[in-house]
Image 1 (cartoon, helix red, strand yellow):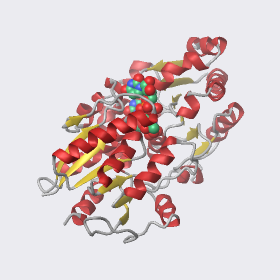
Image 2 (cartoon, rainbow, N blue to C red; image 1 turned 45 degrees about the horizontal axis):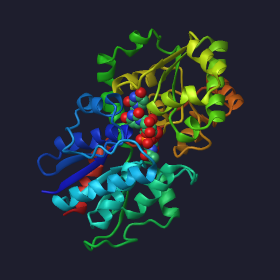
Image 3 (spheres, rainbow, N blue to C red; image 1 turned 135 degrees about the vertical axis):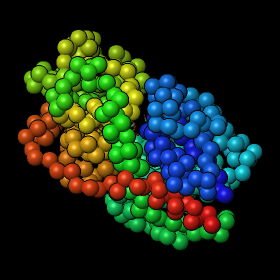
Image 4 (cartoon, protein in one colour; image 1 turned 180 degrees about the vertical axis):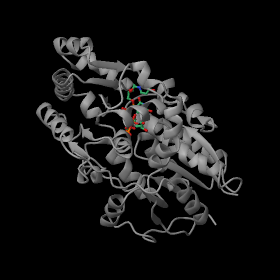
Amino acid sequence: MPTLLTIIGARPQIIKAAALSRAISGRFAPSVAEKILHTGQHYDENMSGGFFSELGIPAPHYNLHVGSGRHGEQTAKMIHGIEQVLCNEHFDGVVLYGDTNSTLAGAVAASKLHVPVFHVEAGLRSFNMAMPEEVNRIVCDQLSSVLFAPTQTAIDNLKREGFTNSQATFRNGKERRVVQSGDVMYDNSMHFATMAEERSQVLERLGVQRGNFILCTIHRDNNTDSPERLSAIVSALLRIAEDQQQTIVLPLHPRTKKLLPQNLNKTLHDSFIASPYIKIVEPVPFFDIIMLERHASMVFTDSGGVQKEAFFFETPCVILRPETEWVEIVEAGAGIIADADEERIVEAYAQLAGREVHFPPLFGDAHAAERIVAEITDYLK
Ligand code: UD1
Ligand code: UDP
């Protein structure tokens, strides 16, 4: 029976892992075993611990508790800890998600020990090498035995870079595989949507009405760490909220919470905080965020995951980045890239509010996780 080590660390990876854990303990039980290693990259209860019980993810068998730090320091601690675990216990493969420092560390540690790497969310590219995530995902793809691409665009990106089935052979004599799997986040959104409707009280708690508020999340380093960009986003939010008399709900990532008072001038900061239309809250549980995504009139975000979930729940989205990996959302007309430009953000809101928006099925059939586990099992035969 193959035993997999799932490596997670940041909030979106914990959420994504729920889909595979569900498949492993459901349809594939008892033929595949899973242990979970949490690097400790995210550690606040509302960024990490809370998701395990909410989404039914088994408690991590290992927690490296690396915490926050500079990229090199944080990643090095993770590589060291993962290597120790892989040396002490036999695993048939490691499962990695996305593009965080935890993904990079897992790929480096496992591939050096010739443990096959299975990369979920392979092939995503922003073509912006200034993003730490672009570096992480390129390295991880290069080191992976099986690349699970969620979309046709991701498959095309991989092809363009020369990734094909059998392009590389690994120490175990097996050849690389590239698989279009669909998106595990879509699996999760569909699986948990009804439960969220039944259990979440977030709309009542925040006093917002379905279809009559905006959801906004901001956490990308190039937005939070730049006074100019953060001020432009906040100015646009304030303008839209007050001109349209729309409540904007902001579950604030700890990085943004820390930098908001530092990187906004006092006048802008005080008017933002004091505005009756701006509701700043702590990061919310998954059931709450999907209710907010589903019932918002529009989503403003620089998050990859929130962009996609807005699309799954048929809510138009203003993308607060210079580009996106999820280009199909923009091509479908359901999202507009507005970067951190005050005028473009205000204009994007007006355009999306006045447009009939379509949400074609682009992210699979909500069975990506089962496809991924079946492929891994086949690879390890
Ligand atoms: C990381 C990922 C990013 C992903 C995001 C998801 C990298 C390089 N970046 O960014 O790709 O989109 O997670 O949310 O891996 N902090 C806390 N408590 C926590 C976690 C973080 O206070 O539980 C604060 C710390 O001040 C920390 C800062 O947030 O320094 C940034 O955390 P970090 O994990 O380094 O990067 P993220 O911005 O969260
Ligand atoms: N999310 C959440 N609570 C929040 C904000 C986001 O549960 O308050 C979830 C969201 O539903 C998505 C994931 O976190 O599944 C996205 O993570 P994040 O925006 O931190 O990172 P990214 O997707 O950009 O890497």
